[in-house]
Image 1: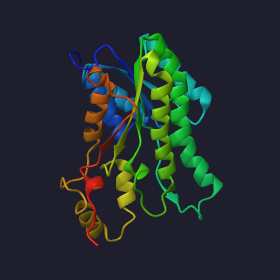
Image 2: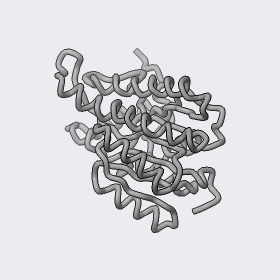
Image 3: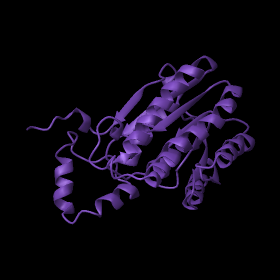
Image 4: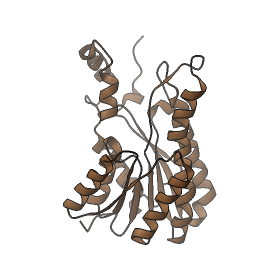
Length: 259
């Protein structure tokens, strides 16, 4: 794979064994990037194999990003294997939650450690390598829940808001050293995680119709929709874009329901 807008770039994509992360890894490889596929599950090995089979270059690195040493080892492995690190996509995460009153410490810790602390650890250890390489791009995969949420989604929405704030901080602190940081807020995207969510509804058909009625574009998002946005923001075409948030939700955020 060559000739793409990410050619000669090295990218780490966390949580890329399935869903949005997988789509981003595949798209980056198609754009010419060397891709380090990260996941806590062995499914990431298959994604790296798919990239290699298509003529791309990929390395699978299994790591639990809640552990600082494993996040550091992931960035070190990317740099050691490819001699550079230019792009980090903080995608690994979990959803779910409860109300502010009903949530317990373990609910907070589980979601915050994976979604927010893991993204912090990865950014912390990626940025010095990026600076050494002349600059880089960090993308945080947040959520429209950061702006508008649903009942019983605490602390998920808080973690996703935190990811946006983190990108702002990176933008301000390291912009002078060539580091850009942006966030993407997907809406409802059809992934294995969202499929598991939809299975809980006994009236799934009615639920699906109601959700589609709130989507002006008339369909649910696909992982490839998010991957396309990520490829642009990671590329030099977005060289003057930093500290911003791109919503990829088919227009759901624009729609105000009739009373």
